[in-house]
Image 1: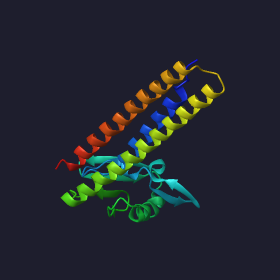
Image 2: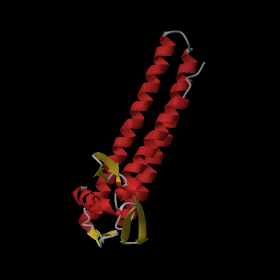
Image 3: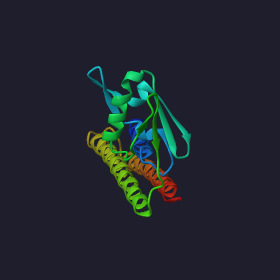
Length: 184
């Protein structure tokens, strides 16, 4: 009986999804509403994500508009955006918050590229940890005589092939994002 790799593959897919979500918040000189995905503000005493309380749109390649559903939350949203690490100063006209994204400098683009690479390395480490868990499971089943030597080798090869596939996917996603950041 070979190792059931379905749960390990699902964990690797979740790692890829998490990695994509993390790098989605890195702005590449273009307005992307995803940069506000992790920004929360105080609403009736509870931290509330801005994207649940406002309509967030990229009106052009350099501007995002945030239109709150409840105008009384405008000031709190503006303060939360200012306090966040997106590095953009919001402008508020009384009904809408505008975020205007300047073109990042060459140095800033390199920093963002390094940040993407760091997230990529973290994702690869997570995938390798999943591989280790799968290999430990294989060794345990072999030790408990639930699988033969050949089945253990097949399982290890299957897990390694799956790991290689997902690490390659992380590298492709990271390279694509870095190319997007470096493009002027």
